[in-house]
Amino acid sequence: MSAAPLVGYSSSGSEDEAEAGARVRPGAEGRSRGQSPLPGQRLPVPDSVLHMFPSTEEGPVDDSAKHGGRVRTFPHERGNWATHVYVPYEAREEFLDLLDALLCHAQTYVPRLVRMEAFHLSLSQSVVLRHHWILPFVQALKDRVASFQRFCFTTDQVKIYTNQEKTRTFVGLEVTSGHAHFLDLVAEVDRVMEEFDLSTFYQDPSFHISLAWCVGDARLQMEGPCLQELQGIVDEFEDSEMLLRAYAEQIRCKSGNKFFSMPLK
Image: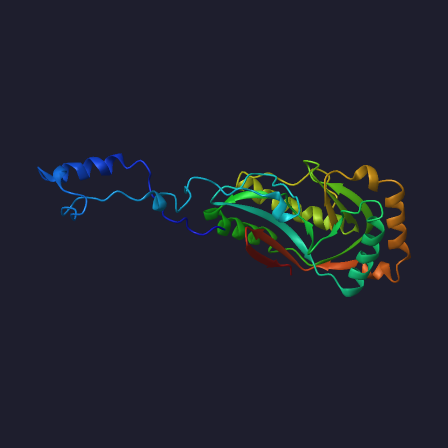
């Protein structure tokens, strides 16, 4: 996930100084400033070089302003890869038209809402994997879901969600048919999580496609009249029944910047 660290120069140098001092020949202390150093004598490293590179032990500063005000649910550490298992959802043009209508109306209640860039249905929480666990983890997933068939599902119920920390709010479309198939998939993903001593999925999960999000807990503004009006837009949208029916054709695992796809039969 991150490149190999640049070489850092130690600022203490106590061992180097002792070693260099032992090599100085008798009488070398009296040499003038303009003379060349003796063979084997080490020159001091300039301060400009010492401070050229940051310490490799310091982790990156997580600036939430660089990603829309979002706050990490767990701190970034070198060698740790944020990992998520999900069913991808390919949005058609008509789906995006419906999304635009929903977002335009929702923004009259919460102007800071923004559209999601990609769409999916989660099968796991976000967990942390060490780099050397990624391939064994993905292979375990492939083995667990190898026998699963593709299935149809429908997402036509508008619902408001927050993350566990209540730092983000989401507008989503909840699964209303195909729920049992998702539960079967989660059961297998959970078994893999347990093998790697990771957190399993939520109890009684609400499978959904997140459409838009904002920073903070906006449930008070969005539940009630806003939610009812958004549901009305979905119900009245042309061919919404067919539009919001889709097939789960693959499972995907994202770990850091790597993606692994597992097609269903």
